[in-house]
Image (cartoon, rainbow, N blue to C red):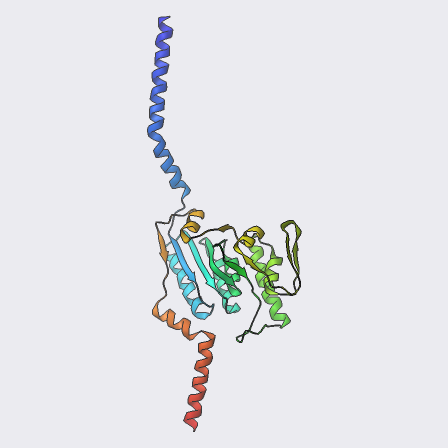
Length: 269
C-alpha cells in the first residue's frame, strides 16, 4: 500500500514537472515556428506606374539588377499603368520570367494593354479591390485600332502564352486582345460575345483565376507571400531616368520631331 502511494506521488511530481517545462518552452517553440514560416530576404518594390516605354524598361532592368545584387527574397511590381509599347512589354516580360527571384504583380489601379502582359508574366497576381486587368487591344499612337492580322495574331499569342505559363485560361487572354474572340466558360457563368474586349475587375479576375489574391495594401501582399514587412526596399527613379522617361514618351518625341523640322526650315529660310 505504501509502495503504491509512493509510486503515485512520483508520477504526480513527474507530470507536474512536465507541464511546467512545456509551458516554459511553448513561447520559444511558437517563435521558432513563426520564424520558419517567414521567408528570408528583402522585398524589392519596383513601381510600374506610368506608360510603358523604353525609359521604364531601363528603370525596371536596374531594379531587377539591384534585387539580384542584394540577394532579395521577393520582387513586388506595383502596377498602375494604361499600357504602352508592346515591344517593350515583351522584353520586360522576359526579364520577369527569367528572374531567379520570385515575383508578384500587385495591381492597385489598372493593368491595361501592355500592363496586363507584364502582370501575367509574374509568378503571382494580387489585385486591390476596384482594380482592373485586361483591355489589351492593339492601338497606334493616335489611339486607332491596329487591325493588321499578323500583328494582332502575334500579340494574341504572346498574351495567351504568358497566361498559360501561369496556369491561367489562355482564351481569356486572347479575348483581352481581340474583340472577335468568343470566350464562354459556363461553369463560371462567364460569357464574352463577339465584339467585346475582356477587362476584368478584381473580383472577376479572382473568380476566373486571373488573380491569386485580393489585398488592400502592399504590406498585406508581402505578408500573403510569406515575407516580412520589416525589410522592404522601394526602388526610386534617378533624375536621369525621369528625364529619359519624358524624352522617350511618344508625344514628347513627336513634339521634338516637329521642333527639329521647324528649326531646319527656319535655317533654310
